[in-house]
Every structure is written in C-alpha cells, then in structure tokens.
Length: 112
Length: 216
Image (cartoon, rainbow over all chains, first blue to last red; front, side, top):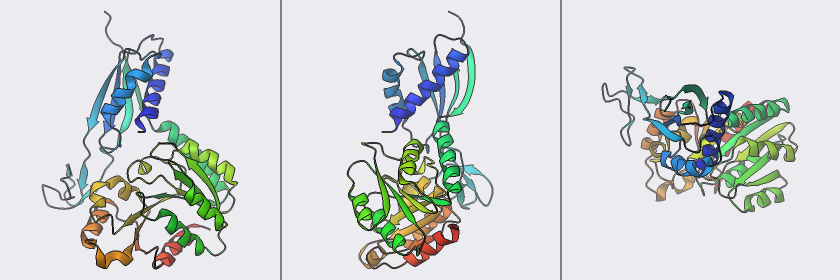
C-alpha cells in the first residue's frame, strides 16, 4: 500500500538530481531495496510507469538491487542468512543478532 | 547514442520523513512530553491497554493520537474518559508517518505529560517509520501465537518495551512461552517483556513503572 507515496518520492528525488545536472532525461534509476525494508519491488515497478509519466523519469528503467537480510553470530562473528523459525548460526550454532543488512532503502544513483 | 552518465545520489527514501520526525521529537522534548509509539496487530488490545495504563498515571497528563484506517470508536471511548485524544484516519494507508503526526500534535496542544500514539493495527509498516517518538511499545498476545517474533522480526527488534497481553487465556491456548522468549531475545536483548491482562488488569503496574521512570 505505501509503495505509492514512496514511488512518488523516488521520482521526485531522481527528477531534481537530473535537473541540477542539466539532464533532460533520466535513463536508469539504481535503487537498493533490502528485503526487510517492507517494500515490494514489483509494486514499486507497477506504480513507477504511472507516476513517472510527466517527469524527466518518464522513460527511465528501474534497476532494483535487492539485499537479503543477514544476522551476525554473537559467538563467532559470522554473517549469515536466517533459516525459518531459527536464529542459529550455521557455522558454530551460536545465536545471531539483527544487523542493518536487509533494511536498506535508498537511491544509489541515476544514469542520464 | 551517447553513453550514460552516472550521478551518485545515495539518498534514503525515508530522509524526508525522518527529518520531520526529528523536528517533532525536539518539539515534544521541549514541551516536556515523552512520546510512545504503540504498535501491534488489530485486536491485541492497544486501546484497552492504554486505558489501563492511563488509569495508573497518577498526575501525569496523558494525550493520545489514535491512528485508524477508518472510524473513531477508540477516540470516542478515550474522550468519554476525559483523555485528550485526536483521531487520524489514513483512509487506507497502513501506518502513520511524521507529517501526519505533526498536524495532530499541533491540534492536541500538548504540554508536560506523556503522548501515546496508537499506530494503525499492523505488525509490519509501523515499525519502519519514525514518527517523532521517544520509545516504541509493542503489544503482542498469547492468542496470536508464539511464532510472531520469527515471522515479524522488525517490530520486535525495534521495540523498547514489549507487552504480552491476554495472559489470562494462557490455560486455554497453545502458547509456547519459551519459544516466544527465545525469538524475542534473539532480536532484542534489552526490552522488558511484561505479561499483562486487559481483562483482569494484571501486570499494568509494572508497565506504568517503566513509563514513570522515563517521564520526568
């Protein structure tokens, strides 16, 4: 549901950077989306074409780099992907804690 | 065709929201208001818990911002109890964001006390947005099941205090407390987990003691 205003924001930012850099057209928007950010990449893509219509991003392609969340083992320090219903480290069976990896949601760059 | 020129941005899409949230937080702190973002799925007893907490605040002024997609039942209930409450209806949006809170704070004319912001009933999006709060309170229940920390990790990770409601129903439901706590502690080492019952009113004194420690 909240992908709509967020997609608007992405286009707003990309459009203003293009304007500042004297570019009439944004060709590619490189977005980084963690799987724990709560955003559904396909929904952003769906709204994108509709909202971008009258902006410098009208013909832009959206490149979404997805980031898989990782925990950090409290015992051996290893970063690992969580198995369902478990926080156990596959290397040493210690317990993992949440990290920022997987919570990203930012615009890396635009290509003009 | 000319080659693409890349312009680095590295800007979080949350930046605008977070900027407003920081301003609200500073404004509330300046007015001696401690703000608590109350999160939890629909039906966990967010409003019932607020009533139990407010009843025990002894002299600390409570304010409430009620967030719902539609309707104002909870606002009417709280107002009938004399609690200064304003309603936000998002009309479909699944969480509150900081621009919405800014307007509600203005309307409430808060000064010296504690502000509870009851977020939309949802275990996902409310944990993602800062809204100017000082703490996040997560309400979970024994009827939802003990797997919730494993299925909705972010809400448990971000909470400063976790209330486990409907504990009077423990003899009647399959709630594995050890499994629940294992999940909570893997995600969050410090938040107190307080067992309560909105029905029997057990446990709320401990919740209020936690709040009073923070409200000066």
